[in-house]
Length: 190
Length: 190
Image 1 (cartoon, rainbow over the protein chains, first blue to last red):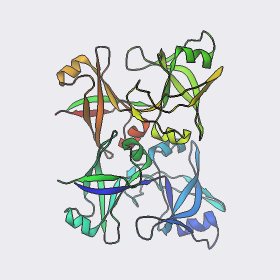
Image 2: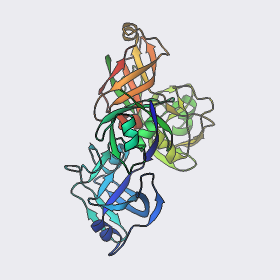
Image 3: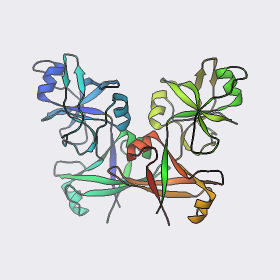
Image 4: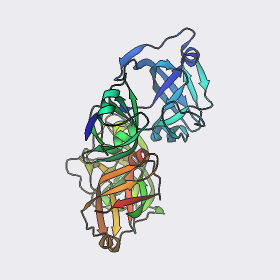
């Protein structure tokens, strides 16, 4: 079993450059509050509000840099509060996902689609993937130990030379398995 | 693999007869809003507020009938909101668990202990347990299928002639595995 550290993703938003301008003002650029484990990715200092049919969640962090398409990543717990039913999807696969309204200090954006529950996944450096005979797009099983232990099935393996090897789960998954940032979990080898 | 239906437990409170009197008034008895799957157990029509060091959760349902000791069952998500760190425990095992304040229409109770994260468990009728060679207190593994599939380890088996066979998980666990009330999961036989 090969161990990897866990990174727990709280609900967050990726914004297109166009939507950054609408929400934060013409010519605005995201500020970098904290670098994340994956190179170039950062927690910005900017926050937005999410508005759904049943409620609002305030103060949701924007992650940078800007992306081609705006994407809202929620835990199922969050989706109930907003009144949305987002599908479990790999990042970037937004087709047919529900829309919602995002508000910022300078304006609002109403998305036709873009809210997803991010599928559990492992960012894996190419060298690690080769060592484990895993390739980009594979699905693996991951063992968690402890009083709320168990196995994650259907863990998407994403491989790149630029990745730091790390498993990403959301807050519901972390809570259900008793996991916190940096804890180690084990990839079950076939 | 033997399948059992899932029952998802939202945060809830069991109250002692003494605490029912304090919170709802002298001589008060819980009303029965909805019978639960386990014989004699019911969702009452009464609600309380939970007050922790970091926040309050309003409108938490009381389950009946009254119990010997007051017990508050939370999801980890709830515990963050309240500012508590409850342990994962089997029902009734409250020793050393954190306290909190419960308020009702007629008064308030401050517990020295009583807040837990309920350990995932299966209520199992004796005949089913015998058929599966399981006995009260065993821990089993349970398979969940679907896009958020996986395995629950450390599932406590509780056996009684009076139980209806059903697996109880909390809302974090349901959300993490994409489960809803009544869905079937499979006990992995040794």
